[in-house]
Length: 468
Image (tube, rainbow, N blue to C red; front, side):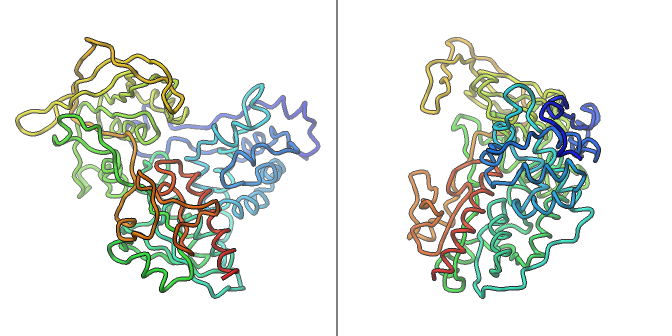
């Protein structure tokens, strides 16, 4: 049995490798890049866990998955036992096993990482969740009901997590979703090759099996207000994200062929523009694409452009590679796929032709100066270093702001100077019974942080309803 392994024997096991679709093949399709671990590989990797008493990996997880416990089951080949633990702690394990930045969270705090490779927690999470989807029945609603009903605004990761937690507590949950499909950023913002839509559908179906209801095409702030919601529901959790794109504010951004990353990825993911001639959603395709930004969204956009035929597909970032916030795995995959990186450059102008279409970009070389408020060295322009790049497609992926539709329709909600909703330590807003979390509170953040907010808010809402 795996529990009989000594620490020395566990340390002797090398980290497994994730099977991948070859780069020269995957760059021509939108199929998933990582192929998943086989059972034998998953058992071997789980046996690398030292089963630390202090469990630092759990502290590093925003949704507090009991990592050593579920890994111990996997190490014994008890995948059902591992799934029973994982599915209680994490409402969207198939998703987080694919897109969560484990390398800066649970795996970063793994004791094994101090002198080698940490345990591949994310890959094992994906393995267990996928195994459960194939071999286990969907969850059932709890028999005991509280008689309380809760509204969740938005079916993104934060909203789905809160909905699942609240449903397991016995509350009646209804999600109001502005779009015609569920998943929020999971569906429209993350490419198919990282998170297949069938995975999102499966996760949502599990929540519906718990009794969660979803009403589509409901724009809170337009279709209905928060005040009207509170007349009908006992509590509300706002998790509508922060989908207002930021732009560069340079000349030429109005040329055709210039997109925000939000629009570009939505057209491809939610509206199926990647299907080419079979798609009813028009999207510009070009021989050369330039994407501005250095985060995961920028990486998704440039890798998508590469798959849509752009060569070169260039990612232009104003700092160095060391400062890039994108996941290391995504940068590595992008390099394998032929994406070209141009570091320490800043955009000055988007160039266009008389026909109104973009033709290129004008940039300036930068060097790193003194650290700014973020702690990173500030890019400083190098005089006389201007140059141009050809571009048929330009995507701006430099961040997002809070969408003001909901908050402007509800002046009672207190917001900060950026328009993000203010909450207390329990996630409650300035309106009693109304809670909020995710990007609408944090600004642009990760899927797992939004999920952590959803889980925290669900506990607070449950306590609020009991006291009420």
